[in-house]
Length: 158
Image (cartoon, rainbow, N blue to C red):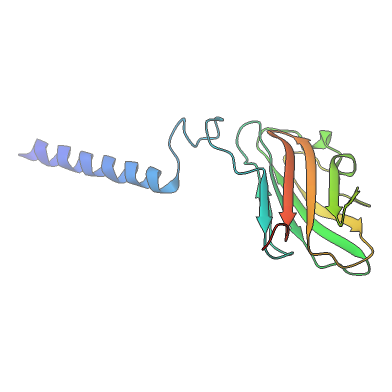
C-alpha cells in the first residue's frame, strides 16, 4: 500500500511538470530555439503609427528586431529599434546601409542609426521626411534568418 502511494505521488508530480511545460510553450525539440519553431511573419501591418512591430526570434541563428515609430517632429521621423539574439554577432550589420523607409512613393535611407554590436542592441533610427506621415514601410535587409524584414504602419487600411 505504501509503495502504491509513492507511485501515485510520482505520477502526479510528472503530470504537473508536463502541464507546466506545455503551458509555458516549451517542449524539447519543438520550441527550444532549435530551428524547428515556426517564425513570426516577416511583414505586419499596424493601424497606429506608434505601435511596435516585431519580426524574428531569439532562437538559434535568428535575430528578433522590434521597431517603434514616433510622431514626426521637426520634419524627422524617429523609430526606436531593438535587436536581440543569442547566436548572431550584430556588429556585422550597418543599419545605414541595410534600412529603407518608403512613403508617398519615395524610398530613403536613415540619416542616423545606432551601431549594432554583441547580442543585444538598441537605439533610434532617424529619417528626414519633411512632413507628417502615417502610411509607411521600413525594410531591413539581410539580417538572419529573414532576408527582408518588412515593417508596415497604416498601409492597406480600408
